[in-house]
Image (cartoon, rainbow, N blue to C red; front, side, top):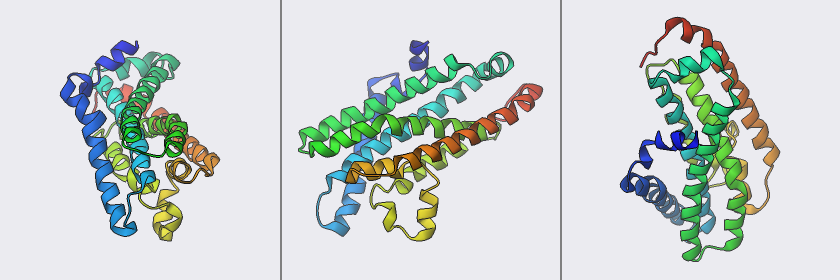
Length: 239
């Protein structure tokens, strides 16, 4: 089951895409964020670099989950799933486990490189504690983005929005308490800010992020359930 899940991920097909997804892209994001931060702080902040890697792991888990279920939809597996066992624990859990492994792998590789570069071990330890949580949050938002966009012409519509907003709403550059009120309100609709705050400061309201994730999960479940009958009735997707 897991071997099938991994084999279905296109970016694991060769070493070039693996290098791009697990090293080049995270390091480019890290460099951009650190350089922007240095313009204001006039110093290199390890907490920004480490937080960037942690959020990249969550985003990769989100994107991988969404891509995996869309690939299944292309193969008509989703029709069989919703016709027989729409709430198959084996199916959905295997998706989550694979995505968490993928996200954690990205983070572990790059956190190790940052450790070799001299990053404070205490911040890395906090990131490692938050890593499984962030990847789970990524999986939940991946499910939500797929469920809502399931029958859109572009099934990646919401995933692209969530992925592009992740760095901003997590407060990687600046803790969200320093955001203007309107932007802070948007950031608090997502579960990433509190884990990032914990990575940076060692203290955060993690129960709040868990509650927000649960609300998103309920939204995803409702979107999924509401579309089962229409999808079965149509027998095809818009894309």
